Image 1 (spheres, rainbow, N blue to C red):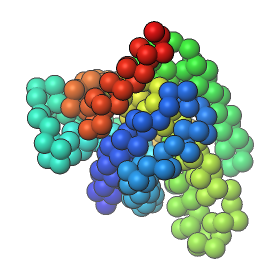
Image 2 (spheres, helix red, strand yellow):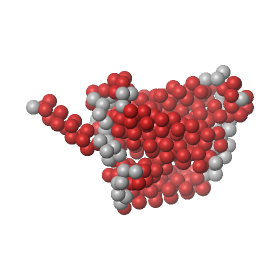
Image 3 (cartoon, helix red, strand yellow):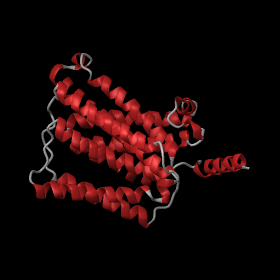
Image 4 (spheres, rainbow, N blue to C red):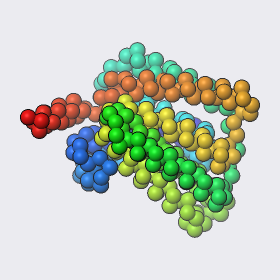
Length: 301
């Protein structure tokens, strides 16, 4: 059940990527890391479709985390890119080539092998206050470092680091989701709102949403999408093991094998992210890029 729910969440995330990408394409380039960006996308009906898809993904993800741990559910969310390729093929009529097939095979092989050999278990601990404090300090520091690195450099560099910061925020939000499901099981729904975890979902989720919009605006989707789908499961695995007591196979050799399968999965994701099919997610991409180029040339002259 956890696997099926996680795959449904991944499908909703793929739809959200398409709609949000369309919604942010026409934003002014000087709106990066400003609330002007959100003011722009809130006036775009297509972006609201993306938000609805994201809310659907949220619901499925919470249900999946209720049935399984972070180390099981979060890696499955990388199938978002596979669904993205399929949606673009069958909905928008984009052709699938060798790059897409190769990326899908590597991603599925790495993910399936990791899930088969990593021996996930546990993951039902309720973290104590010190555990939460250490996790928040570590993740906020890591996200802040990513944002600082994104302030300079080329467009792909900036987009990748904004995407990494967003991925960390989404991983933290997933941690709060998991803790909330445990609290509901132990004390019922009314007890949930006497704890900070559900409010943490909102704060971390909104931070991730804001950073993701900046990642989409800052540079090519090849960079932002790769960092989003790779950093999120890796950060979630670390949080799951360190905070919730998720179990992975013990021993240096077993952990090295786990790392190898995740590296194989990440390679497949990078291949998919550089696919022309996924790069040109939005049907407006070409027109928007052309208009931006004309505007820059006019300003330069």
